[in-house]
Image (cartoon, rainbow, N blue to C red; front, side):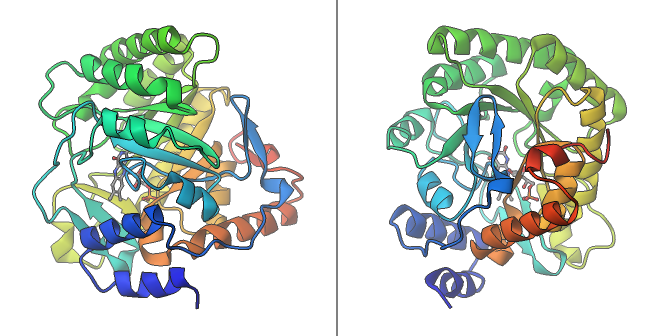
Length: 351
Ligand SMILES: Cc1cc2nc3c(=O)[nH]c(=O)nc-3n(C[C@H](O)[C@H](O)[C@H](O)COP(=O)(O)O)c2cc1C
């Protein structure tokens, strides 16, 4: 048993937000065990001219303030997405706001973008990086015009981003999800693109948008049209869901407001991924996220159109050791299916 397992067993006994805060502190201070596993070359992939050692990344929300991305890269993540970060620091919703549903392998959160703001994150990002770090931008709760906030975030942080994400899909900021409409999205993304190009000159970071799983066919189609028209570099599918499937165990916790993530999200977000892959003719890179806790599930996402995958909730139950387990299984499954490189498997079930 290494320090990561000992910490995980302890952390499961305390309230989830305290456990999270302790985890961040440990990672930030280098208190973790770095796995010996070396990524198999079958997992190597290249996207937007960037080399990813493996396609398994950390999704937004875990390292909101950019304090432990190097630790997560050390633990085997192929890339890390920090944020969501808003222009001004904000406290988020009152506690408790994070709930475990262990029997369902799920989590409900209504954090509401608690974070230390772009100036703090800017300082964190000056440290040398040990891999690819994406920055996920949100808006402050009280800002009336969302474009102002996304442009501010972009102005400050795009020069430091390996990729930039516009998050219009968290369910815990009032009105945020309405920004996924065709006109609203076009206005935000085109303004951010202009700012990014001005700030970053010749080598701007790719711009991605992260969407909710609770969208209908028309919404999806509209987003695909916007992404194609504006030549958006990627789409992240998906954020947490407002669904409360009635087959879950923790009936009391299910009544908590917020976004549900983890296992119950897998099917819905994967189906949506496949639809978006078709709507964009496989031409826009997609990041598949939602309910991944095994190599098999990561493989499913990839075959359904994901060039990269991300996870968060499964780490609450499986700890850091899960990252290596997922990669090892993924290597095995890719080889069993006759693939020589991960990129050959992308979209293989929906082509
Ligand atoms: C506690 C928690 C906080 C999150 N915070 C953010 C966030 O700030 N920004 C964001 O884009 N997604 C956020 N997410 C969503 C995750 O990035 C991810 O899209 C979602 O949880 C589905 O993946 P999973 O099932 O592997 O957790 C959060 C998720 C959780 C569980």
